[in-house]
Length: 247
Image (cartoon, rainbow, N blue to C red; front, side, top):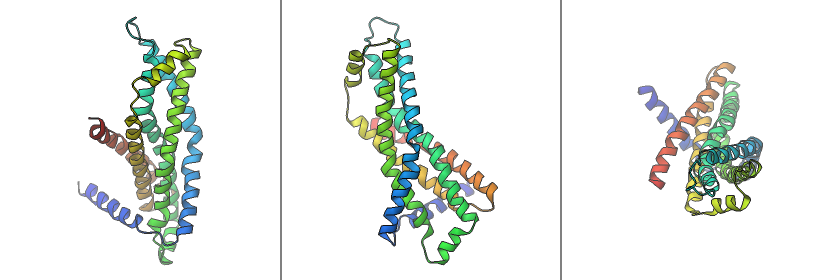
């Protein structure tokens, strides 16, 4: 318990250092642009592939479980839309990004720590926490919602492809299903979750990387801890946000 409280206090202290005003605005904006490319654009491929296939799977499974003639075929599109918008795109995609992006951040900052590059920044009077972690947080908060929106579109598109290709439902019925009883608030709910998750993933990964001690082995361990803890907190906050916004 004492170790947990110490880690929480250390994380809060680091977060305070991170959110101080950047000393050089142009440099900070350039770093954000680089991080958007490194953390977001480079993840677009895996997000697209997983979204299309998961949408297809949801559509096929929904059609397979419709055994009653009383259930309209538009249920396939409706269920695919709800599954993608409410849970798959904002939560599962962020869990995937926690593994890909989180490990990258932790290993990058951890390597800088063990090679004493962070110490060199501190000697030069640079707020290393702000310089290294804040651009990553801002970039993730900007780009992750965009990735999730793309995932939503591709997931629903993948469901349509599978439904039509497997002759499960016609395009007209699928479209009627995905537009039936649509509530725009669901998009807002998903975006709120995504922003919270993006902050958790980047800040926690930055924390584990920043406080890495030792050598290459410890960098690997820090990356693993960052992914595990980020994933756990994403799941926990998924429950909390869902209860607060939909409960």
